[in-house]
Image 1: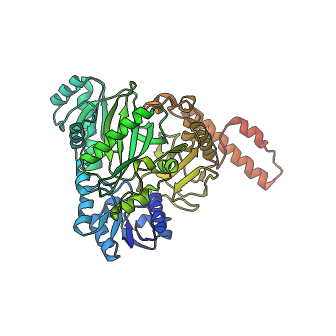
Image 2: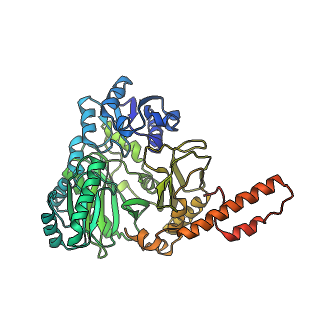
Length: 496
């Protein structure tokens, strides 16, 4: 039984893990970079230690500092959260060689699923459909053209290692291949330290469906249902929901069995997610396996009642799963919105800064996972995700309405956020009918305001500020009634 766990992460996911450890009676050690000395997760950890400078490679990615820190604090286990070192086999190996339990899969499983080429081979060998494409990394243009013409254009050139939408480029015909290869390879080398790429058929407007798995060390594997992650922008997930509006009971059983076969093929343990693309005809294809806790795990917890993070820790301790497959019953519908500190009016450029006011929505069926607070300065060095807002309802319509209300209540002042963008999606008639795919955002939503409209919005905002100032100071100057100012624009000063 563990007594103390080191959390090799930051922000809201570190806070989420601390809460799970507390419920299990475990002490926690938080690490932080110099940029994160005011991070909320430090207030709730039992102990904490600065791991290095702000740059991730010198702190949150520095295995040579994290392992000794865990040993010095007497930690028996490390939880990597997601991102950073969560899917790095070398980190799991370092834990194993230092007799520290890595709360995740084995280093072998991480290696097998970390390479998309290797994963495709393993999955195909157990009879799970894979997207047509190359079975090896492609190093020259002629070979890539040969494969592309065999599977048919358009094709997607993808990084062999890594994920998160990086190192991916579309080639619509032969003339696009060279540029797609070079661009994807350069980005893959920069992001993941490996320039290798391969090519696969680009499925037209598929659904992105993933299955959440839990696997113990005794060979038991169960699934917790699917999540529909089709609402994306530049291959980055924006909104997830469970269950999927288009998955029938029959298809769910078939896909769940396929997901479990994938996990069995690599002797997988702990929490993991097998991801598929589903085409218009209902055929599904293996996309990848995320060998870690997913960002969107909270909505699965809301419909199943299973605390996935606590189960991760119990599995790492050697406990047998407390659930059989027949014990898992989903109730209702849940939707998750990823709130980023990005400016949706300016090509979603990241805009970290100081949060002047922070007010979270509440009420039945609403959950917010975040490490923000009023006065907190969001660092420039890390991912722009600042909050996860989830809403549960007895059915999809209720979940959508509850999410709409929660987005209206959510107030984050001082930085730009993607809340307005989420509002537009939630209010879209096609989304409300469940008629979405991975191309939904670019085709249905696009930019939320044209540049000229944005200028008028800013002018209206400045006018409203002036009105408020003059009203407050009452200098006898004529002012425009606030209701008249509101007619000019839907923008509300200081409110998101």
